[in-house]
Amino acid sequence: FSGEHSYEKYCTDLATAGVFKWIVELNQKTRQYWSKDNQLLYIENVVMPL
Figure 1 (cartoon, rainbow, N blue to C red):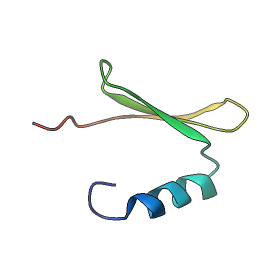
Figure 2 (cartoon, rainbow, N blue to C red; figure 1 turned 90 degrees about the horizontal axis):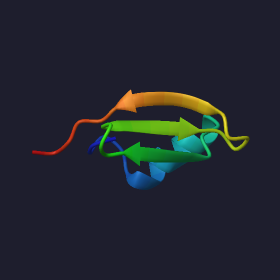
Figure 3 (cartoon, one colour; figure 1 turned 90 degrees about the vertical axis):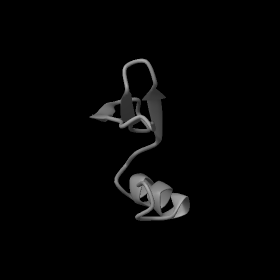
Figure 4 (cartoon, helix red, strand yellow; figure 1 turned 180 degrees about the vertical axis):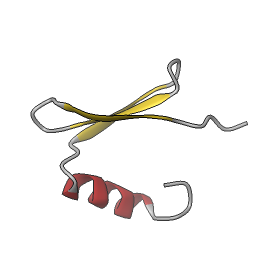
């Protein structure tokens, strides 16, 4: 995401891919993507700003 696309495009692309919500776990430094039927689709590591 980080500057390559607008926030709106990011959200649209995620919705098109079946993502209903995402959760950022700051302590674990991960982002979780969830489907509408509450299935975990993907977990990625996030880079924390300096």
